[in-house]
Amino acid sequence: MNDAIAPERALAYFFYLAHGHCHSAAKVAARLLLNCYNGHRFQFDVTDLRLLDQKHLDMALQIMRMDAHCTREVHDRLNAMYGRTDFGPRFEHLAWKFGLKGKCKKDWLTAVEPVTFPDPLSEPAAH
Image 1 (tube, rainbow, N blue to C red):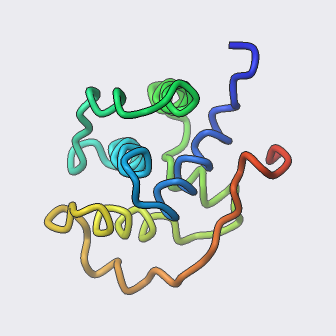
Image 2: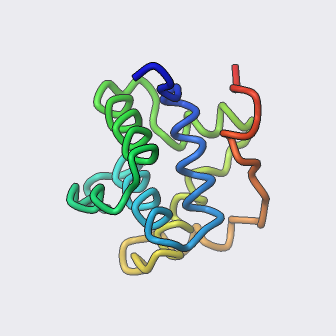
């Protein structure tokens, strides 16, 4: 993969996709991220990867490889990348948004304030 996107950038893009969109690829992105966030509560059906085009599938595989050798939880990684401390509640909000209401921590939903995240693929790579 010559044009492979760095795993951290793929992670940021999948969050951007899940956070700001509602189509099938966004739902797959949300479910994959939630599985990386807490696999016990948020199961991921790998057949959902069939809904992704090649670009998004490559990014999903990058995220899965990164998570397989986890040195930092995905929400902590995003907190560090964006200089925030609220990605835990934001992941809970994704669960609520995509209909996993029975599995999200409802008391964390009020902690999420609206914020717009830039498209990580249109911005220079984060350091």
